[in-house]
Length: 196
Image 1 (cartoon, rainbow, N blue to C red):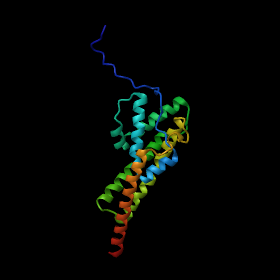
Image 2: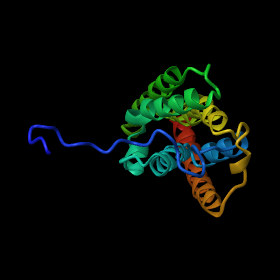
Image 3: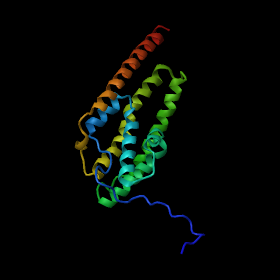
Image 4: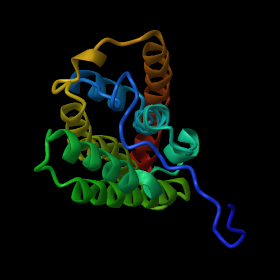
C-alpha cells in the first residue's frame, strides 16, 4: 500500500562504474603539450572529459560543460569522487585528494584575479607576463590530480591516452595562433614601455 506521506524516492547514483574508462587518463607528455600550447585552455577540456566520463560511467545527473566552465566550484567534488574510487579499488590511497583540489582552486582564483587586473590594464607588462606564467602554475597544480586519476584508473602513465588526436592538433594550432598574437602584443607593449 502506498504511503501518501512518504517522500518520493530519488534515483541513486551508481557506485560501480560501467564498462570503459574509469576516469580520463592522459600521459604527462600529452597533458603538458596541450596545457602549454593552448594557453591553458586545455584545463577546461580536461575538466569536461573527466565529468563526461563520470556521468557516463556512474549514471550521474550532471552537466559536464558547466562543471568545466565553473571548474573552481566543482574541483573538490571531482576529487572526492576519484578518492571514493581510490578507496574502493585500493589504488593510490595515500594521495591527499582534498588538499590537491584546494591547491588547484586557490590557483584558479589567483589566476582569475590576475587575468581581470590585466584586462583592466593594471600592472602593465610585468603582470601580463605573470598571467602567462600562471598557465604553467595551473599545470603544476593540476598534474598531481591527473597523476592520481591515472593511477586510480589503472593506467599509471596515461599511455592509453598518449597520442594527439585530430581535435588535439586543432586546438594546438588555435593555441599557437593565440601564442603568436600574444607574443606580438607583448613585443609591441615592450616597445611602448621601452620608448616611453
